[in-house]
Length: 120
Image (cartoon, rainbow, N blue to C red; front, side, top):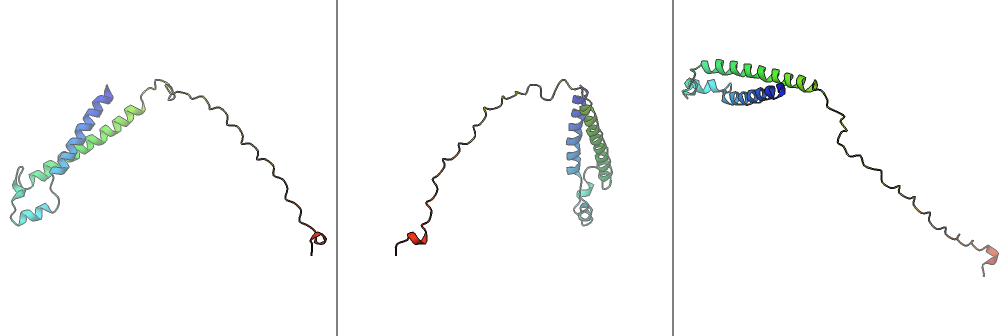
């Protein structure tokens, strides 16, 4: 039960972390605001969004880290119910393969004729 609760918190923290990272402006966004784009004063004000989003991102990153460590601890200390080979079908060894047959012996090559036997 504890593993399910930690896993649910972990997934929620991961989704929230992804969302917050995607909402944040890059470092170059402030330069665009200086030239009149007006995007920096949208929801939280010019500097309020950076503080709120970065603080919330840091908190969710810490929660994600702690739930990762918690899941590692819980799953590594889970009692084992039996052998890892439990339920594994043991196969019988195959019939022995017969040794390859010996090749038939070949007749020896005829001896070369001697010089005196060669007709001239």
